[in-house]
Length: 318
Image (tube, rainbow, N blue to C red; front, side, top):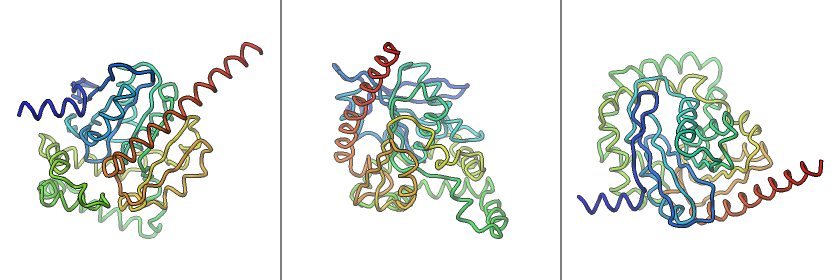
């Protein structure tokens, strides 16, 4: 047991608890002994995941940058709160964490629903973010566009039936069984060998926490609301920072075709396709992702530093 704890410490960094709005939140930080890169990274997981989902990235990225990782409210080892969830709520969690512990421009890195939270945080608090990396990007506004208007009341009625608290809590008890969970996770990964016992345990443990059923119901109820997240097609053009968008070609959760609709929305957006890869390229293809991301950071942060210097010189000359 002790050796396992040491192993996790080495892979995730130091883990701490933080109280945010009365809720317990878990985070980790990993600082390299020496680094010439002053810009910290903050990693934000996807739906159902936790900081452990970055276990193959933190040690590598942490050789070059200070790395923080955060369990969003409702996930991981953070409080399973019965509340109204939204991308803005998580964006405020990210911002308050930054204001409490970091207080200098950072690079936000998100996967799936974590990408929604990071993009929203970058738009609402531009002073916080130097650059952003998104590992796929759901757009909940597309849901309304894809359901024909006459069918929307029918779909809503069916969701009300399926979304009863008792039924959803029962469903969670079924879905969190390791054998069932393994099959579900396999949908998110193109490479079956990436669905390891370790990964299943990472996703299984939080689903057994106290309050997990209430949080699951709250999340299901919240994500159906139009105000759950802003339209990414509206938000992306407003970001005046380097944007890396990484997408698995075989993503069955958020189809790659959505990535193609984002490409021309912002001239600073760079789309990189991982093929073959599914919904979690950072975990399924960690070596490829780590190399790509570090190279991108090196290029983009140097470019931003050069732009800042040019602006300063222009201001002095002006």
